[in-house]
Image 1: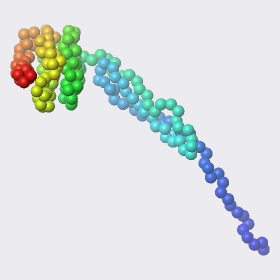
Image 2 (image 1 turned 90 degrees about the vertical axis):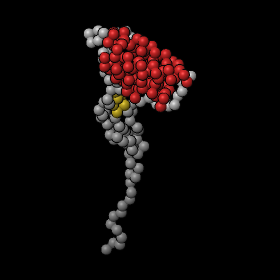
Image 3 (image 1 turned 180 degrees about the vertical axis):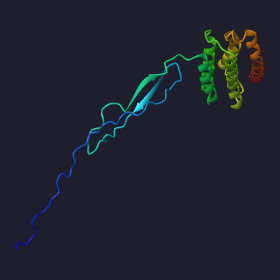
Image 4 (image 1 turned 45 degrees about the vertical axis):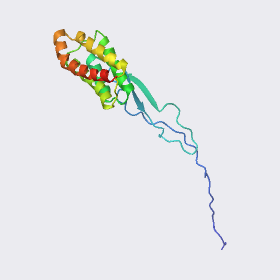
Length: 192
């Protein structure tokens, strides 16, 4: 009989064909970035259907898309709640000034009619602004912030809802807050 193997084998197609990437389906939309007044939300997709391989091309197009959301205007109560959260999270003098400016903008708008709960929250926000200085051992309250606080105290009783409380009642509800704030303000004034 013949000597040797009746067949032989060799390697071939050692370089696999390139695989171009393909996008997955988009995921769910993220939560809206704002509760009211207009925000944005985003959803993303991944280049893994299939993933690019063996020198194939990356996916073409954007990995995320954005759309507007919660376009309804914010009520005064919504605005106060958001400013309150910002006040709770103050970490710098810039944060403090930003919160003060938000309060001033809110109280300067005569269409922002408030109830007693709103006024109480604003008083608490002002307390937080001043306490932030005390907590950070700041001897002198920023002059701009100081003026904003005084103007806020001066104008807030004009923004009350007459169906819920009179201006006199509003002033009365603010009285204890005004006394606390005045004492704190005088401490700063004496140190300056």
